[in-house]
Length: 550
Image (cartoon, rainbow, N blue to C red):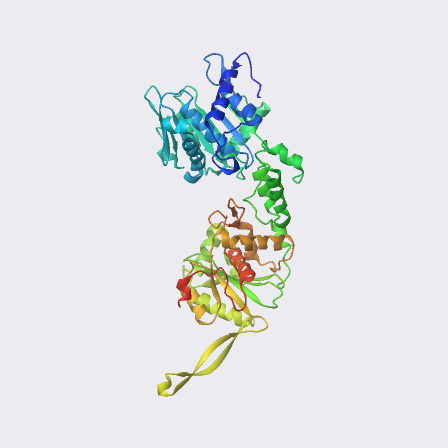
């Protein structure tokens, strides 16, 4: 347990142990294999958090010393369960008249996680459900003084939070806060309370310009004695950056619940992912070793990407990915030859965008246009008719398709015969499928389908994008990809930011990526099509009945 200056503070053992006892008496697990069983706090939860927070008090007024608690801890160490238990204690048993307790986070869904657990804890205990009323976004409690106390989950908009009078604040995943506004508004709302508690609990992040990293740095300085702040309790669990990430001792150093809450098998499974998905190392370090690393800054480092600059070998069947622009964006058409893992990308932008972006933002659209790496369509919005004609021309030049004329009967009752142009796919270099975003421009997709192109809708969610995204990553890190060093595709690869879901599926996040990533998205779709399409069977990603009806 943390040391304290006995001249100013004292340890109230009864108060500290009383909180631990209350939690273990009234609070039960509501998720996982322990659901329905009462919580048994681990030693680290009591000695590092519960006992110091609720037991160390000021001699001058016998109120709690710590007003802000910053807990930085790896994933899966039951931080949400502990946060929910503390929130309920502040609401139901802390003795604060008219207590207001709030759950906040980067968005309302994240904030609702701890609140939802707390609500389930109320509903799971017949004693608590008699005194507290759980609602969709709030829990209310009327004590013997007849004054209403409440616990609410709130949205992330700071401008609507002025006027709060918080006794307890639960900040979940502080690293997701987009700025410091909500933190400042809520923490300053505690000023009129006798012993308010701000409980921030988070895993490490990657944005070192964020409010979370600012608090992280502050916590480290308080721990080191560089800054003296008697009201701030820093609790940081992490492994040193130089530690061997494959060593179980490293896992133990970062995870206080290792072996009990955090299963060794789970950590082993996570670290094994790095072998097949090398870029997962930074994610593993951040989520499971609690190290601040640039996960979202670089998906595939430039030196790794440029290590795949060998010229494409255009042999065997190929697959296409089509990422269609709306208005002023980039349209990308990428061909992928799986036999050699070769990539051939093509790009289009409106001509006026080239001048605007080159002059105002320093993006090399003008250079790429002069070199023929980026094609243009007239005006200030993309013209899909030009893209259509170019794709036909590209496929003919590559001998993927060829033009033939045939005589066909037309209106046979009148005996009329006409000649019509068709496009046939080459038997040595066939185009087996072209994947496109199911929400893309329908007119271009319809036109390509009318010429016999095997188009298939490709959803942009985790289920569809994860496997081919991981395959592209693996090919790149293994040095198997051949993209010829295309400058536009290189730029787009450097812009990519990856989003991960709770099941560790990944996909490219267009909104959070620093700049355009359309070519990489098209490449992922082409790889996905190659992994699922068969010569006589459409891709399992084809899911747009509107297109199929044409």
